[in-house]
Image 1 (cartoon, rainbow, N blue to C red):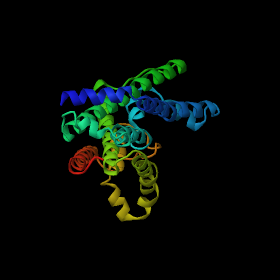
Image 2: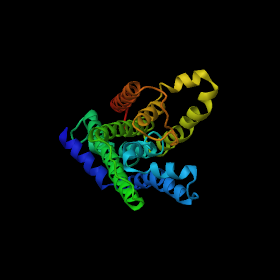
Image 3: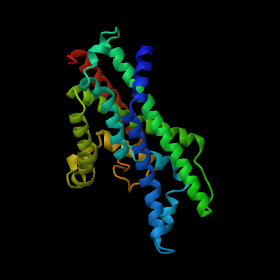
Image 4: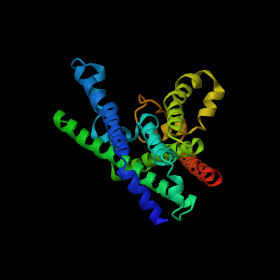
Length: 274
């Protein structure tokens, strides 16, 4: 088991596409949570109503919400792509049979991939917090504002919640890759769900149809957005809104993580990998 974990982690680290995805995630996070609000505040006339709120959103006290606010949608899409690449490339390169003939079982190799994804998603979340802390500290210092950091417990809770959301989307991508035995189609369908269908349900259909509003309360996106909102993520961010309580949000997202992981393992074990 440990050999499969280290092997999959080594493959993940040495794949340039994963580092590229990490760079995109950092740039998106900084752009939407710090640079755009700062630019909007700088472009407003002095004393305009939106100016103080724009600057306030970039201050250190909002570190937790800013760091995990993108995970329900656009940063979640990056996690999904990483999950697809981790599993789906084995089909494109026809390397499943090479790996499995070395001795480990399918579920052992799959567990190694889940371990690698757990490390990767944690690294993305920690990087988001680290870059956010540096950026907010620089902004606060340049504006002469006090640096009121969240309590250590809040930061740890935020990291845990962000990791849970990120891992859920990554494992969702892995399950799609196994179900469709490839990369292109799982990425395409996964991104359509995250970036289009989920937002249409959240912003268009739910306010008009009561049954859609009830349905979305059981979907991973709405619960991930509620979990992020409960920790301070801005409601102006796509996919963010306190639709359910924090306990339900946590349990539902965790349940989807287990279901996606179990479904991927079951499909890999039952079907031909070729």
